[in-house]
Length: 266
Image (cartoon, rainbow, N blue to C red):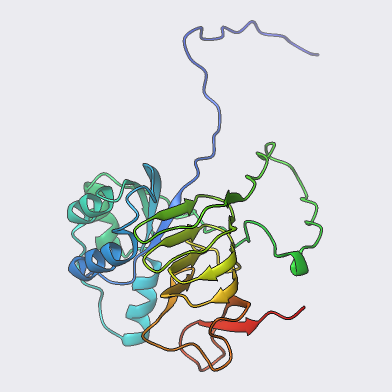
């Protein structure tokens, strides 16, 4: 027998499940002074890099380091950490991966424990022409995806002191990037002219991003935070040549990722 029971629907509210996009900070040190210095070095001259982005603090790297070293992890001053991150327009909301004492301190500071949260795998914003392949079909569609942003195109020379940031997309520059200028993109950077300033691709951690230039003479090149400055001369035969820069993971037994540069040939 089927029974239908009359129900009352609230007129003033409705509760549904929702997904919140988060930026994750993988904390590798409890030294907030050192953290402040590195944040300033990377984001100090990009005041609008973050825009009140919700943040999850991941303490897993600290626990992994403690296991390797056999030493206990020090305390974390979460109120000071939250204030520091807030100065870069980040809004810390949650925390995961800490030991019981750290998680208790984080909760007291107002952070929400999210032990089941996981990081998304690295994905290129847009594939390079030679690497582009049809995307895999998802098993299930949770919600319609927004159309990807097209590349930001700049057709005027960039002078010293000028900065262009392509948030969430590739950057295409059709004119010279002079010394002292900066081009930044979350995806690839294409410079169809001499690149003499600074170029930072994969600014939000996209390790698949690449830098292309018709004449590489850059003061600094960076992909996903791995960088090389003019203090280290370019390999022989690359300076002033059409060049591709990509990031290659460190081999087993080799520490850290490395930038690999190749001359582009027709």
